[in-house]
Each structure stands twice: as structure tokens, then as C-alpha cells.
Image (cartoon, rainbow, N blue to C red; front, top):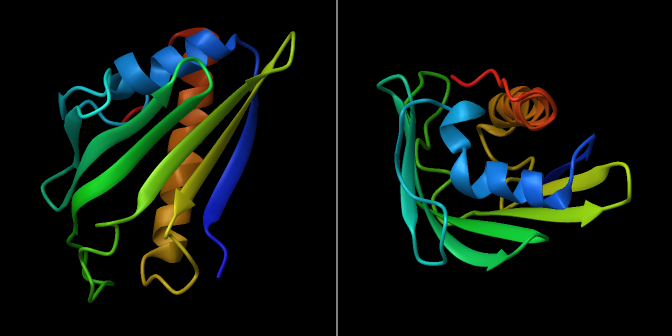
Length: 145
């Protein structure tokens, strides 16, 4: 099965995209953020209300072209889901490619496939937050949770 992926074209530099993914997560994803994503081995936790919590570990950083997070713990406690920890053990990979006047950003959520109960909910969330990321990078103002 194919992993979820999306590619964005961003009017910015690769360095600015890399910075958004390592230094500014609360400004585009969720303001309920604790920890750090700046160095390999760092861990951070994000929350969406009281029922959705995810803890990630930074497993790879190649400035300014690659950021990879391993989902260490996950709770998606919503009534539609039986498996509330589906994200645990998945990997979120961001590849960044500077193309002159724009930067291509590819997100691949390795392990998030159509077999996941949360696939539709989670892919809708990724669409929302990748748009927020793009807006943050281009304007300085995202739409975090």
C-alpha cells in the first residue's frame, strides 16, 4: 500500500522551509507544543485538544534538504477510531528542494496508508496543516490549531 504524500510549491528558500520544520512548529501546526525539533535526537509533543496527542523524535536532519520524525507515541482518542494509537511507529519525512524562485516540499508519512482507520481524517488534517505551513512560510502567519 502507498504511504500518504503531498508535494507543495512554496515561494521561499529551502532554508526558510527547513527553519519552519525545525524551529517554528507552534506557528503552523499547533500552539500546544512542548520540546524541540532542532537537533537529531530531540523530541517534541503536539496536542490537539485533550484527545489527540503525538510525541515525535527527530531521527534525521540534513540542512536544508531533509527533516525526518519518528512518531514515538500517539493517541487519537476520537469515537470513530478503534485503534487510537495508529500513528505510533510511523515516520514523517520532509524533503526540501530549492528550485530558484520557489521551493518544493514533499511530505511523506511512511506507514499512513489507506489501511489505517484514521486515513481519511488524518489526510484531511495533513491538508489543513500543510496549507498552514505554506502560509506561514510565505507570509509569516500560519493557521495552527
